[in-house]
Length: 585
Image 1 (spheres, helix red, strand yellow):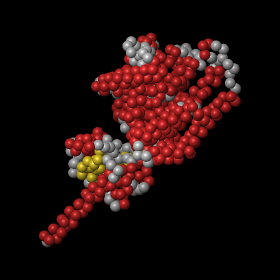
Image 2: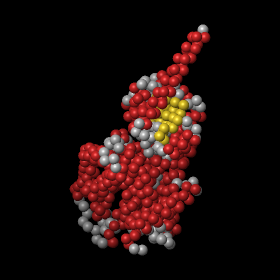
Image 3: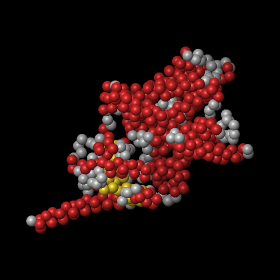
Image 4: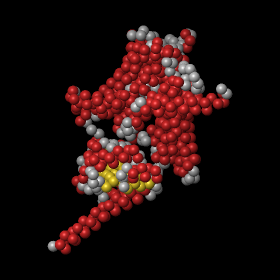
C-alpha cells in the first residue's frame, strides 16, 4: 500500500474491527474492551490478513492516553489529590516495591533468569494501566467517589515513580554490568552520580508542577475566556485539544515528564475555569475514540505463539498481577482503616498492567537487561489481566459478603463509613419533612440549592461527586455523597418523607433508574427531571415522568420556580382548608 495512506488505513482497519468485535463482546455480556483487544490481535503482523501500521497505532493510542488523563484532570482538583496523599503515596510506593520483589524473586530463583532480567520483569508487573483503571472506575461509577480518588491518586504517584525508574535504568544497567547486544558495559556510576540523576528527575517534575500551578492556573483559564467570547464552538474545541496535547508534549519534551502526567495536570489547571464542564463534554467523544485505539494497539503487540510456548509462565505472571498486586493494595488500604468496599475496589482496580509495563520492557531490551521473549510474555499477561479485570469488579459483592460472614475484621471494616455518605449530624428535623431531594452535580445544582436556601425551602442534595458534596456542605447545606439509584442512599436522604424529587444531572438512563427506585420508596413523590435534548424530553415523559425540562442557560431559574410553586400551592391549599373548616363551625 502507498505509504501516504498508512495512517488512513490503520485508522479504518482499527475502527472497523474494533466496532465488530466490540459489538460481539457486548452480545456475549463481556466488556467491549475485550473485543477491542481481539481486534488488535487480528490486525497485527502476527496473524494472517490485513496488517495495520504498529508505529502509527502506538502514536494514536498515546493520544488516547493524553485525552483520557486530561479528562480525569478536569474532574480532579488539587485538593482532591492532597486529600488522598496519605494513602496514595505510601500505598503506591509499597505496592510497587512488593510487586517488583515478587517478580524478581520468582524470576531469579524459580525460572533462573539473570538478576537484571528479573528486575525488569518485577518492575513491569508493578505498575497498573492508567487507561484500564479509568475505564474500570467509569464503568462502575466510582470515578468521582473516594475509592476513585484514591485509585487515581495512586496512579499519579505510580506514574511519577515510573518516570524516575526509566531515568535510572541506564545507570542501574551499568551497575549490574550489562550492555546492549552483549557488548562491554560502561563504567558503573558513582553514588554521587546516581544521586544527581534522582535529584535532577525530581527537580524536573517539581518544576513542571510548579509552573502549571502558578502560571497555568491563571493563563489557561484566561485564554479559554478570550476564545469563548468569540462564540465559536470550533475554536473552543480546538483550544481544548491544543491545551491537552500541547501541554502533554511540552511536559515530555522539556521536563522529561510522561505524556499522561502532563495531560493530567493540564486538566487540573483547566478545572479552575468556569468552562471546565464544557471542556469535558467537548473532549469526551475524542477520548472514547482514541482510547479504543489504545486497546487495539495493545492487542497488536501480542505474539500469540508465546501463549502456546510458555503457558505456565504466563499464568504465573497473571497470578502475581491479579492476586499478588491486588492483595497488596487491599491490605495497605485496609491497614489505613478505610472501609471494606474501598479496600476491595482499589485492589480490583490495580489488578492489571499496561502501557508503562511495555515501555519498561522495551527499555530493558534496549539496555541489554532482558530479551524480546520477556516483552512478549509481559504483553500476553497484560492482555489477559485487562480482559479479566472486569471479573475482579464483578466478584467484589460476593467477596464482601463472604468476608463479612466469616471474618470479624471484615465486619469491623464494613462498619466504617465515609462521613459524606450520611447526612450531617446537625441537619434539623425540619429539613427532613416534606423536603425536595436534588440529585445532581455542577452549576445548575449549585444555583438551585442556593435559591432554595435563600427562600428557606427544605431540601437535601445527593451528588456522586464527593468534592461537590464537600463544597455544598461547607455552605451548611444538607448533602449526601453517593449514587441516588442506590435505595440506601435515597433512604439516607429521607425519601419516604420527601415531597419532591428533582433529577438535575443529564443522563436519561440513570434518571430512569433513580426515578424507578424513588417511586418504590415513595409513590406519592412529585418528580421533575432535566434533559439534554428534545428527544430525551419525549423519552423521559413516555416513561412516566410528567415534568421534564430542556437544558438551557436559564434552566436553574425554571427548576427553582417550579419547586417554589409547588410549596406555594401546598400552602394555599392548606389555608383554603382552614377557612372551610372555620366556616363549617
